[in-house]
Length: 67
Image 1 (cartoon, rainbow, N blue to C red):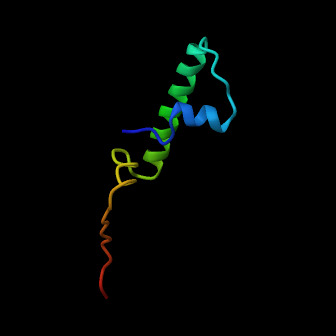
Image 2: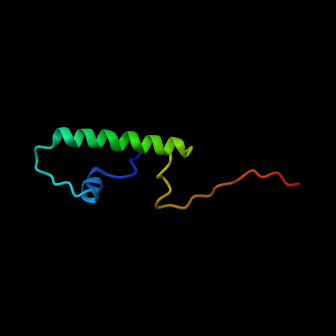
Image 3: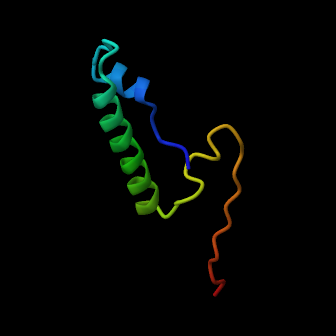
């Protein structure tokens, strides 16, 4: 499963600077990003392929009973 956001995107969005000694912080943020991405994809009932169709088409079929 891919993450919904990268570490660099997170750092840029929140204005965090990289000093080269932030390995502990980077590890913590990466773990939070991975955990949050899994939580969101599981909540949306898309545990394996949440971001798979960003650049490709997806066809979904809904089973709706016809009266």
